[in-house]
Amino acid sequence: MSFGKDDIGWTPIMEEAQRATRVLHPETLDLPRPSHRRVITVANQKGGVGKTTSTVNLAAGLALHGLKVLVVDLDPQGNASTALGVDHRSGSPSVYEVLLGEISLSDAAAQSNQSPNLWCVPATIDLAGSEIELVTMVAREGRLKEALNSEAVNELGFDYIFIDCPPSLGLLTVNAMVAAHEVLIPIQCEYYALEGLGQLLNNIELVQAHLNPALWVSTILLTMYDGRTKLADQVAAEVRDHFGELALRTVIPRSVKISEAPGFGQTVLTYDPGSRGSMSYLDAAREIAERGVERTTE
Image (cartoon, rainbow, N blue to C red; front, side, top):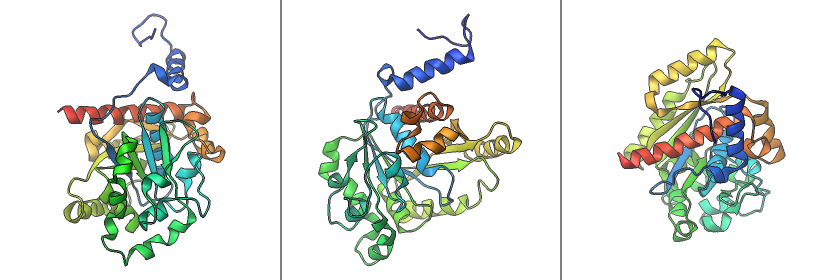
C-alpha cells in the first residue's frame, strides 16, 4: 500500500519511510531494462564535483533494482574501486592491463560485494603512467572501446556500463568518450560550477567529429546541493536554463553520509539506505533508467 500527497493520512515522514523501504527491499521495485546496452562516461575535468561518487551510487542504484551493471574505473586514484569493495592493490588484474592488451576486460572484472548484479574493472596505481605508454600505440584512442566490444563482455550481459574518468581531459578520458554512447556530466551547485565546462564540451565535440559520431551528452546531474543557500538555487537555475531537459529533476544534496560511505568501502545505498543521499541517488538512477526507455520508444 502506498500513499500520495492527496491521500488522508499522508505525511512527509511516511513518504520517506516508503522510499527507504524500496532501497532496503529492492525486489519491490524493478527498473526498466534498456533495449540495448548503455555505455555512459561520467566526465568533468574539475575535481571534487562528485564524479566518482555519482558513478558508483548510480551504478549501485541500478544494480540493486534488477539491472546488471559494470563500472570501469579509469581514474588512477582507484576511488570507484574502493567504494565498490573491489581489490585494487598494485599487481591486481586491472584496467591498466586491459588498455595495454595484456588481458581481456572480462578477466579484469570483479564482482562487487554489495550486489550480485554490480561488477567493477578496478584501477591500480599502475594506471598513472598509462597515458605515456599509450601514446606510441596504434589506435590509442580506441583501446577501451575494443576491450568493451569483445565477445566475452557481451556474454556477461551488462545492461549498463559506467566509465569513471580522471579529473582531466587527457588520453584516458578520450578513451572513455570513444568507448561510450553517452556522457553524464556532474555539476556541483557551487561558485565556479560552470567554469571549464566549455572546454569539456569542446572536447566532446572534437571526439564526435573525429572519433565517435554517436557520442552525445545525455545527462546533467546537479550535485552538492545545499537548499539553505541562495547560491545553490542560482546555480541550479542557471544549469537548467542552459541545458534544459538534459538536467535531471533529481538533485544530489550535500550529505555527510555520502562522504562517509567510501571510507567503509561502500556506496551510500548500502552504508545508509535510508539517508537523503541514498534516496536522491536512487531517484536519479530511476530517472536515468526511465529516460533511456522513453528515448528508445520515441
